[in-house]
Length: 204
Image (cartoon, rainbow, N blue to C red; front, side):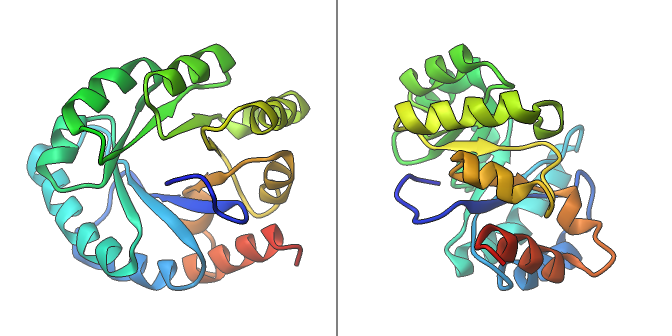
């Protein structure tokens, strides 16, 4: 995930539990429905073998689509599993960069702390992630606007993004929106949900 995209783009966050082969087919259709910059593999508490199987299945899809695959929380595993990068707490950026080197993407989860985001950016983060969006309101949107105005490192807004809230965060200056539950659990299906969300970002 890099700067320079002409509009706010999407990072899809996987459900915490899924069947790799079936989900990989669903992911491929969903990615094909709209512009997706990255997929974040988030499997809290998963066994090593489960995470490896999931990464292998999803990597085949993301490679074909030229979409980055980022692993949540573990740079060593990201390297072993052939992921394109990692998403880590803000204070883990320097260690992740040391493990993964300059070619991988390192993203920083910063809560709503501008100080943490600035430290992460200085440590070499490729993006900083603010959230959860559901706890921010106008104060959070102003924080995103201030970051977009003054900083070069791209910012992601995460945590409860849906079709209703996405346009406001994009208008505030978010470079990327991390979307998970709102897409995967939509009754219309993830492809339709993602198309509707991206249509809202483009003004209808």
